[in-house]
Length: 197
Length: 158
Image (cartoon, rainbow over all chains, first blue to last red):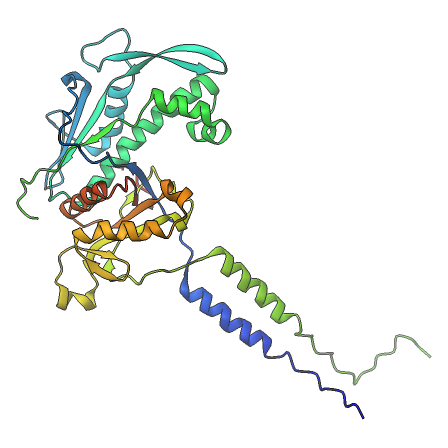
């Protein structure tokens, strides 16, 4: 005689699934990580002399241990930093001694060669060991913003797109823009004037 | 005779809950796919600074994290309230960073190693001294792609 096996109740299935669900809710993070991406310079070789750079090509930004900013020897403000840096890095042609030198390069725009005067300007940034990380990031943010806006302008001029849109659509074209407006930020070794480590 | 005569005493049929597990499972799978396991428990306080020029981290499996900040309240008695570095689940010294980078690198398949990125999660109130030490050490370890973790919503003009 074959007895039918009684059906197993599935009523508790929901409870089990709920338990698993709650476990995952608790142990996981939903936050998308974002931040400012930077490339560090490769380690220094002892026998290599740093290249000499013309003084007028350098734009110095100093931050002291009291989080005050010194721009090219004068007290500066984070509010105007972005526009000042943009003005400095924008190529000035014909040669203007107040602004960095330019260098001729060819851009390949949609198969056509275009002459471009690339600025040789470099932002030099130095901070103290006592500088707070917050102000450092804010300055980095403004410098990155200035370069991004210059790239946007160039991409807008030649392609009618923002740099970000161009990067998605045509990577090679975006690389050209990147070359024309490099992320020219140099960070000097921090000084230790503030005293507090 | 009337077809529509109400059967006054009939009860409402119970709504079947048989599909409830399926719905919950769907939710469960959504969360399993959409989330990343929290890898470490933080033993330092990190409140990232805000910025606007941010980029998303694409592939989390290629990112290693370095946390810098003051020890959490409970640990401050033992460790003091100086900024400290956290690697994996423990406090670390600057000199340990090289080993940490190499250890993380071995976990990444070889063809992807160039894309390895270090995400620095540093407290907004930390001092640059310790951050610079870490950066110099990263240079020596040849981990040059770094990302300063930030929150959105900064406007310098304000």
